[in-house]
Image (cartoon, rainbow, N blue to C red; front, side):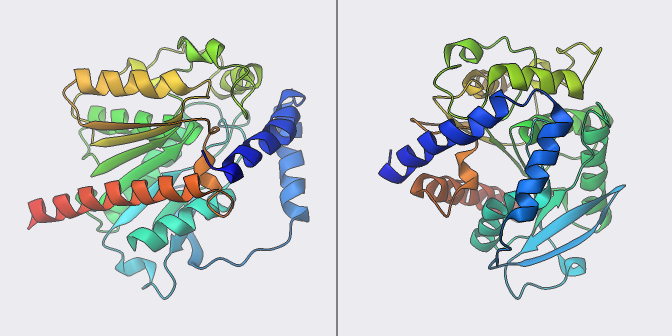
Amino acid sequence: MSIRALLMRELIRQTAKRRLRHSDDVLALRRALEQKKHNAKPKQWAASIGSLPLGEVTAERVAAENAAAADSDDAALLYLHGGAWVVGAPEDFRPLTTRLAQLTGVPVYVPDYRLAPEYAFPTALNDCEAAYRCLLERGISPQRIALLGDSAGGNLMFALALRLKRLGLPQPAALVGLSPCTDLSGSGASFKRNVRRDALLPAERLSECISAYCPHRSLEEPEISPLFGDLADIAPTLLQVSDNEILLDDSTRMAERIRAAGGEVELDVWRGLWHVWQVFPQQVPEARQAIARIAEFIMARLACSEKVGE
């Protein structure tokens, strides 16, 4: 673990985790984060960034500089952002999405799906399904689409894969989960074992966000907790997670379930890092390394799918 990552981890523990621990009002937390964003200096990104409608919501399209217009896209990365289903927006993830677009040469679409508690389950999942359908309607082959998500977005990614299978719709070429929340019941041992080691997520705040997202629902429904779904025949999957996280077992058990169902999965467990460290490529080398690994995985699957379709 690099010195930069060690320092960043402790900074996050003393600032972000402390703020989250003392924010028991979801809407107040959202307002505070939006105010912080409003006060931040504008950043210049080495990418072409625009927006377009995908279903009932707007999506941010992040492409490499000098990329062709969206209507000529023949491949896409559909990125479902995290934020515990209650906060977050596409622009918050530009450090990651711009780098993915640069490394792959494939545009990244980030739907601004509707958030809880105003829009409870299954609204966010419906928005993500609509976004995927829109990419298909734009003429992009499912074999040229990779589906990615971090944290709550990783939950939506797996839930969408299960829904696509249930509806008889084609799977994408690849799935990539960054510390995905796959078991909203919190039954994994790491949810308690890592409660102090986790540098970002307070377990009690995550539980409150889950209650806001899916009130009065069974937390073992597959589209709420994909770990309990039928994982046979989902797309080849890459999982990245830190060994310090309360959500560690959400990834390790998901990998076990996918393998048991006969699927292809690669599990990368990184030592000493924090929840979704990949959004800090400008600060820590581990984030850049992780994104490079993601890009390599995606491009291998898109290339394989292209050959199959020839």
